[in-house]
Image 1 (tube, one colour):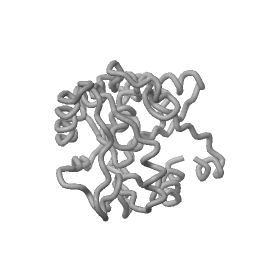
Image 2 (tube, helix red, strand yellow):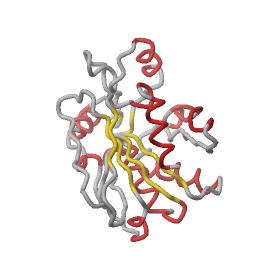
Image 3 (tube, helix red, strand yellow):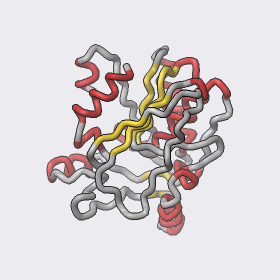
Length: 221
């Protein structure tokens, strides 16, 4: 945020329900639709327009449905090492390995909590973060994910959403076994050629390469 704000842009990094300063709201009723409401609510309450909407990882589902709801306010969609869905798809359709997380949650004591992924040996680390200080900071921020986030489908049934330009940023560092990336179609829904950029790092590039990521985002703004 400081890097983008320092370049003169207004930046929002909202906490989705159940995370960060909204962690006390975590519950089994929270799902993808809840998080879409969070993002749409922020944009409309702040009366934002010409928004460059960035979704990282699971949040690729969130920004897709949010743009479907308010396409007139969105100038660009950025899928940051993110799930890129089609209409009616859930996280499992886009990233089949998430079915394992759903099954673990359903068998757990709560029946709905998906715990954060454990740290793995280098070069994978914790979501690609390997510096001990960064790992400790990140670990302190992680919380369980409600299983409904992975089960509810994305809605992309508004034709206007197809006109929104898209950019895909792929983190091309080491990728854990079982995690796959859906190929980006050469032609995007608005008829333009796909724009795909790469960062030579792990999944959480906002921690490992914040300056480089900011430079890419500033090209779009």
